[in-house]
Amino acid sequence: MKLSIALLSLTAGVSAFTTAPLQISSPSTTSLQSTLEKPKQLTRFDRIKAKYKGPQINISSDVEAEVGFSYSAFDDAVAATDYSFNRNDVVKGTVVQYDKGGCIVDIGAKASAFLPLQEAALIQDQGNSIESLIEIDEERNFEIISEEDENGQLMVSIRRIQYREAWDQVVAKQETDEAFDAECVSVNRGGAIFLVEGLRAFLPGSHLTGRLPDEDLIGQTLPLKFLEVNQEENKLVVSNRRAVVEAQMADLSRGDVIDGLVKALKPYGAFVEVGGMSGLLHISQISMDRIVDLEKVLQPGQKIKCMIIDHDKVNGRIALSTKTLELEPGDMIRDPERVYDNADETARIYLEKQEAERKKREASAKDIVLGLGDALDELGSNESSSDASDNLDSLLS
Image (cartoon, rainbow, N blue to C red):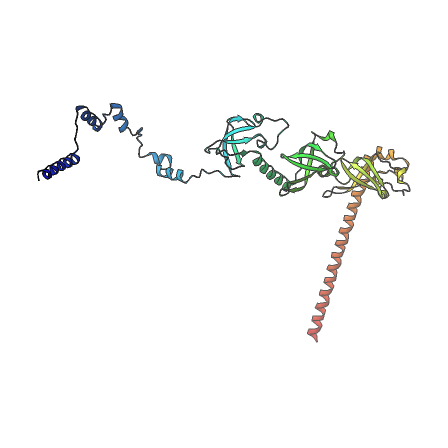
């Protein structure tokens, strides 16, 4: 019995020990806890910084009326602005620095754009540097020609903008059909290449007046006109002969006496170069006398004087004559120099004679018309008298 009571007492003591752990308190532990729980004391600078809300601007109520828009309208405009950049977009930019093989351009994107040397201009001479084509701080339009790379950089071009502008100018010139000057940059077996507004145009050898397309032509400037303009196929064909012929034809008239150079003989006449154009001197227009052998009268390379008797300005064709310059029939066969020496005087006499004959024909035609009118009037009066007589007879009967 006593042993059981002792065991119960021991068990109760152990339970009391485990449920109520020993709490040890020391002055150092209490001090540490109070330090951690105590809020941090702010300095005077921290208190001012916490209360600072930025610079305060006093805006009068009349500002919106003065500037023409409100702050809310400005916020809406900023929110509606699209800052995306896409390929083929034309944007305004500023050159900020030169770089290897090109230059850096600020277009307002998150990263600066790059302008390669080959895209800096439509017309570039051999050995051009980027510094000679564009200047630092130059502001102009650029076309985006690439997507963003891994660094967010875009590639831009000036050449492509100038290319479209050049085609617009070429199309406008074709519509007006005016002559223009262009420089030859190269020659080939079929003709020559000219720069027209920065675009390469082909000049066929057959449309080059008075010379062949050789190396001496490079660097020379000639008057041209368009033969073909095809923007879709990037094709330009020009003619020097057409420009020269039309310019010459504008200054030529029937009856003019001009100098010419015999270029070729044919059974039906001679081709004569006149001011860069080719005119036909028909065998029937060489002399009033019949010509049996043309080679005895004219030779290729011979200089002559002749009169323009007809011309086709649209197709650039000229009809020439020397028989109108003969003082006597057959002078071109017997003494052509006499014809050339007196060409101007003979032409004057011939034109006066032609004018007198023209006036005589007009007067004759006028007399015929007047005579026909009198005859018609007389016929009308006779018919009226006959009608009146018939009416009187019917009344009397």
